[in-house]
Image (cartoon, rainbow, N blue to C red; front, side, top):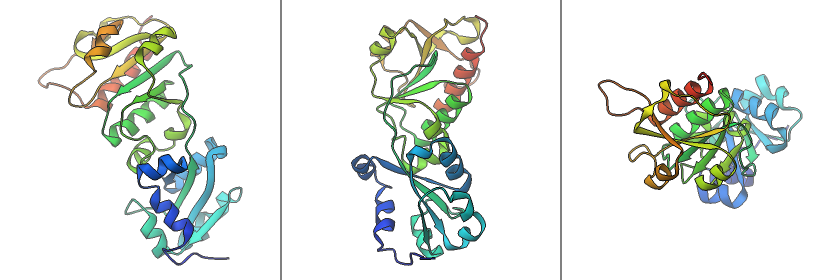
Length: 246
């Protein structure tokens, strides 16, 4: 069993490059860290997994679970230079970035300049939980380590489109619903069969140009506070409209 013990190894250097967006874009690759996340990724999208990297100590416990994939074993010290978390569990996978897709589900959510990686990742997880396709327009990178940690395996399970014009979403038959604090009460509305929720930038909200072409603006009624976190607002709206009385 060959064990990589040098941080100057080509594979190790390549993975460390993937921590930067310019290299993720150049190689069309990203990495997923953590035993459960990697296992879920391998199960859900084996076609995306290029190889799995396992620390020497983790290999004895979990290595057998990745026998169907190309595997590199590294020393614990080397894995520590790759890991983005303190308790890394000693497993990561290098994956191909899937092609961007146009939404096909009856429900989708468009993120307009959502810049926090944690918010983007959390919204992806919620979208997966209630069957929404996702569009990310000028947002935090979906495939950054921080976003991937927040999204977990949702980053490969969700259908994700990038930089798709809201006007094209409308042309595809979606009712465009902008989340805006001046909109109507979302709990007192009915939804049509095919709709797209727009969640805006954490500080500025939905772009005014999108609001102008939206079919409706809806808000989450609130007391004693000006606004909700973007990921929380997205979750409330996705579940609320998903299960609203038609």
